Image 1 (cartoon, one colour):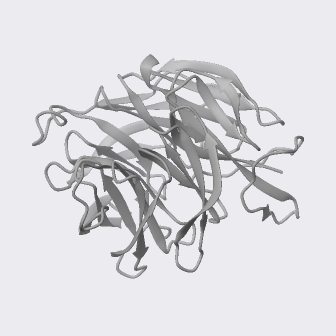
Image 2 (cartoon, rainbow, N blue to C red):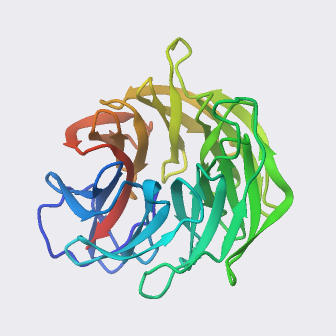
Image 3 (cartoon, rainbow, N blue to C red):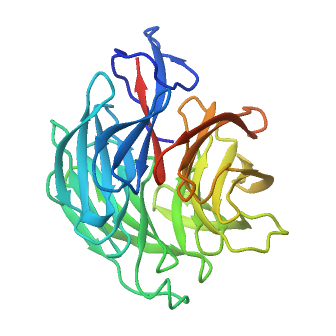
Length: 365
């Protein structure tokens, strides 16, 4: 799900997913990095190791060039930049204000020159320039959302939850849990500016609480995980206008489930055939098959995440392994993915990490 990158492999003992071979013949292995509501970012070697201390790095993203990692530090209302050395350790570069309260998501544009963030508590988004040395500049663009939706406790105001660049780098799609909207902005990659598109948003069912978004492999469809109703909404996507048209909405929970649960993460397998969604409460990952011609989903069942409150998960770049981060039980669990059916099988590898809430990947060669 994240861009993989290359570093010189100068250490042994890393926990590795399936190896990849680049055209140069160099063997590349991916290594999970774990963001937490704890004291720092962890790397999964033979056992979890603290790669760098930083306060509650709740969401991580790796720069497309592979040399830098960025974190949203929610309690500090800040974004932090780190360089990666040849051993996979992280070194703090700088930190900048996120321009809003509760930054919960970060993502790059396709050029790697701009970092976006969604500020959940503040209900706003911002774009930051990335300097050549990996450090962050002050925000070049800032947009404050306004409005509310039907749930007076959770949707009393805007709550921007994720920032998602379109495949052609022309639009930024923002899921806002508080508004029940996916807001669309035209993005100027030369200046880093954001301008409301026309139409400026797409709606989901009232009370849904859109959280995260994933584009289909070919860019023709987009899928949104709705936290509050535990549903997945499929949209067709028009790249010329940046517009979304709803196709279908399905539950991410089993039909016989009666308890309380909230949906969290969504991801599409690299082969484009399968979609995964996590449920906090049911503590599972739901599997859907994707019809590549229509974009419609077909439910294929659920697998336990072997822990409590799977806030986040990620698929390694080869598509062979999925790591589920169980926040409440403090563990990260490894699953093998069947490339033909998309099914998940626990590998027996469970890593104890304090309050893990994000998974991304470093690739070493």
